Length: 155
Image 1 (tube, rainbow, N blue to C red):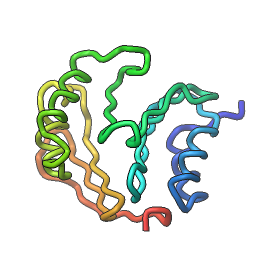
Image 2: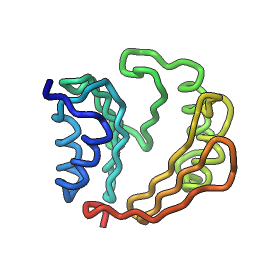
Image 3: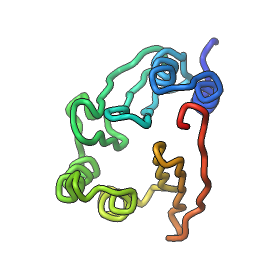
């Protein structure tokens, strides 16, 4: 029917694109089989966004140009829905503060804290494009599976 599976759309974007502008345009315009939230980061100042997608269009975009962070749970925040996980995650980020933000503090002081971390969470992934870092933390262990990944547009 002319729609693309989300993982294939992401892979195609990584193959096709060499910069943040290209990948955000690709993810905004590809026809998808399901609604999805894309969290996209670049390596330059303010290159970060949460893109909320319907199958055939963008529902909402929030960027780092709007705030020092963007935050997403499984709620459509742009519709005014910010339930407990969302509220707690934002509170944890605000308490941490931008000056104290590192990948480690984001993981330990925000992502893995109650109620931000859901009992339905399967894994948490931390990606730092400017440092070419990728770490995936399975739910049942505190030992990460770590791999270095550097698609062309992140180098």
